[in-house]
Image (cartoon, rainbow, N blue to C red; front, side, top):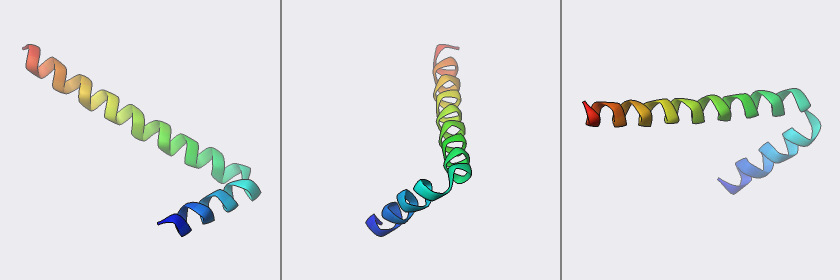
Length: 46
């Protein structure tokens, strides 16, 4: 697992485009989590 993280960090240093892609993927995943948790809250209120 640590090796994968180190490899990712090495790739990020050399590839700005993949850094951007990685960032977008993380943001999208975070947004999905927020939407899902928001959906759970509205279901509980109803």
